[in-house]
Length: 394
Image 1: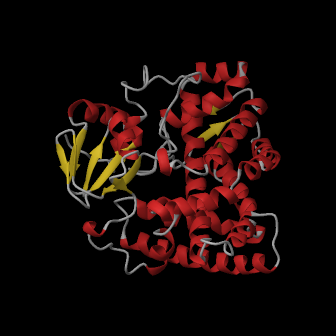
Image 2: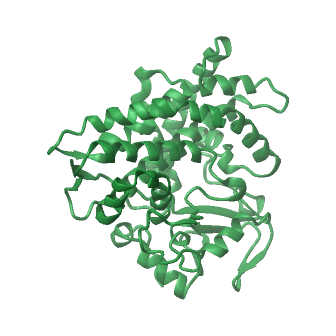
């Protein structure tokens, strides 16, 4: 089969392609991507728990192509997502301490306030872009306040995040690389200055919590502090925006599900989980082979790259009954939207809080929500899946 994930047809609806791949080529190598792809849930979950695979680039994979992007390599390549072993365990322990359940729980009232304000701005009968007017501002404000970012500089966060994560896609250009490098340099410069301020005068925010960890035995380095804040912005923001847009589109295309959720608001938690399964914001996660291994008859050499197609796994009929049905009461729902095992997303509780709060406010305050364009356009991409815009009317 041809695998063309950057085509318009794939961007519009990748799930029929995934179904065909699971049936005909569940494990396949694509030379243009330099990856062997896995499409089935069982293979992907096994890979996530296989200690012979990891995210950190092994020496056998050869040199990286990031030497002309010194700031990108310096900060993005050392974050929690890109490390393994003792380094990963240390970073995860420290970041879990700073992003504690209490810190997330303490944000609940503020998240409700922000979501309510954004939803209240939706004037009846007026067409708006849900992505730009609601989905994007919510995580930007939440994350900026969590970090302790100056309100006057908040407008820079979304462009920085978009420029940095663009390099995760295979079709990124040289211009994209320049923008990502500039975003890393500028973001790191501001973070370093803010960390120095918080070191001298701590506040009740995430940056202050991380600066306190710099002084612990086996604590954070300043570069690790910067990379951790960068990851929180990039992963937390991109995932929440895309999940919110994809989730609302799923509700609009399944009016019976929206009616059921209005009638039974207690289903908001399971509804959000189903949104994350049905049309997840992250479709690809990759790993490297630390030794030669075999998968379904395919030999992965040491240093070889494996692509885990989460978007396909979340529609695998061997794992989910009627996987193409949008069921807001689905249980159990062991989707892979946040990954699994040692790389399970540390920010998942915050993302879930934002999504539950947003959809709760949206449905409670709007008796009618209409889709204003039949086929909203998605960004082309294999790693991230999200809408360019979502025109609605309340």
